[in-house]
Length: 114
Image (spheres, rainbow, N blue to C red):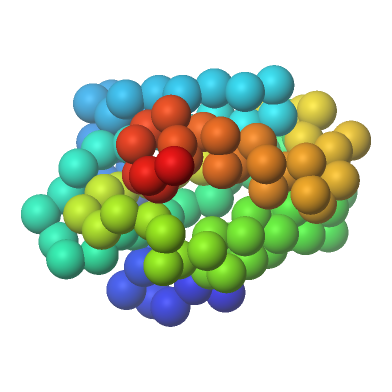
């Protein structure tokens, strides 16, 4: 799990990112990014009931995405608010492919220099 200072929690932050943020998409994931004025980036992971009706599957997917970001935190540029949303095909993707897709989207958003 990400430390509390690296997580987005406020509803006003979510609304601002969803309205003004720049979006990048893949079949399994969507990312919205907005610069913030902080020394660190903050992340939120959204998995709706459209992905799965079972809370256990949604929570597992949320934990997997959070862990991918946590393990690769050193590569992520500071100063951004990021909302990662899962699409229904996300459940059919294994952990490695999920990590690849997330990395590709982060590179497209210029949050990781590759």
